Image (cartoon, rainbow, N blue to C red; front, top):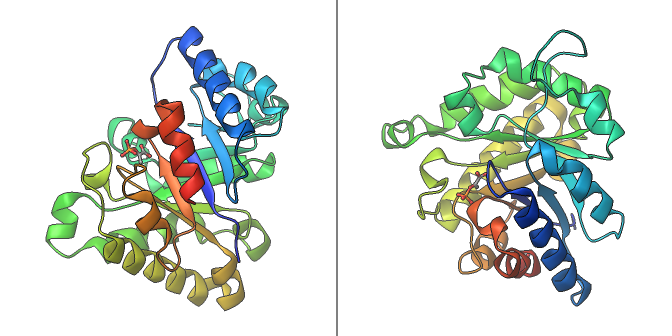
Length: 251
Ligand code: PEP
């Protein structure tokens, strides 16, 4: 069986002292439990070095929330994949709906980001998911199909095998409304069928697909128990150490 993953997306929250406190609290709690899951935390860029240092203790891995589509050079404000790699960052969230929406990240840009990440040993956590109007008009499968195909299906099998996907219905992110376990299972199975068509059943079965969207310690157990749900990408609840560790325990 695949080992489940719980990744915490801190988004643009916390000052440095709060971030360090959260990391220390996480370590204190994680020291006392034996988890079956792998834990990844994704702090904002300025805190990556601090978090990376703490990650040496072995309780979690470090992910970034963004990555440049460019290799290096005159791109003011950007952070490259090789910079992240040099700071022991192992994962990066790519294609989050907030970046698609507020920063106009389109399929072409996301493809470039995925390529940069993979070229520099960073594992993409590639997010897909439909908006509420898209679900209400029953376009959710079509939307997710396009996002998965355009963002990832240019990869060869070896490259694709490194990618983690996250199904995050936009209407569930930060809203307190979670996809029902059946909705999550249905979409995860659909994504897996797309992967199977393109890369074959073996790759499809081995691909990690996380669920994201208002995941808490109250709903995580049921969501993570669904076939094809390999853990969670957790936003708001990852800012509270106890709550996040509770979720990790349920995976
Ligand atoms: C996210 O931003 O990836 C997310 C899932 O957020 P939340 O858990 O707060 O809905």
